[in-house]
Image 1 (spheres, helix red, strand yellow):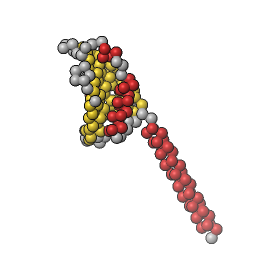
Image 2 (cartoon, helix red, strand yellow):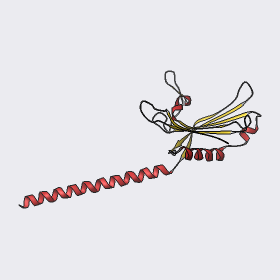
Image 3 (tube, one colour):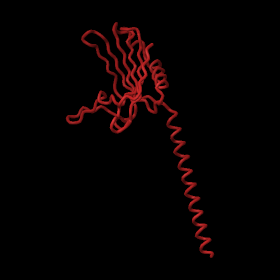
Image 4 (tube, helix red, strand yellow):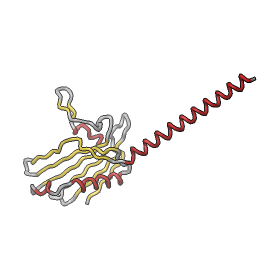
Amino acid sequence: MSKIKVSKCITFISIGLIAVLLLILILVTLKNKNANDEKIEFIQIHPDEDYISYTGAHHITRHYMIINPPEDLEELKKVGERFYKENFYLEDLSDYENTYFTMFFYRESRYLPRNWEPNEGYFDVDRIEYHKDDMIMAIYDGRNFSGKIRYSSLKRSKGIFNYGDIVEELEYEE
């Protein structure tokens, strides 16, 4: 009789320990998930492209990665607009009469990691132009041409077979 009681106690203790460990594991993952979702970070992933076209228009293009971007397109537009207004320098447009300023924002992914570098190898070429499936926002500033700034926010698919497909789009002009 005592062997049965001891084996039942060991079973209850082991089940209790497993439940406590699972609870601790769930709490730790929720804490880490919430800590990562709070901080939105911008990283410039490609050097500025600055050139004058044959027509005399000055083109400035910048590429950034947004770490932990918001899922809501309206919120993404607000974050991008705030970043643009804080990091846009008016002297970029003052040098030339016709200047077109563009910013592209990308999500972090398996194909475009945080430490991405362009590769111009002989067999393996990896340029930023090949990562348009990870672009989630674009800002086109053509104030010298049309007098408007256009914001375009995109929600893209993360599926295996339809990776990068546009699921939802929000465009805004000011």
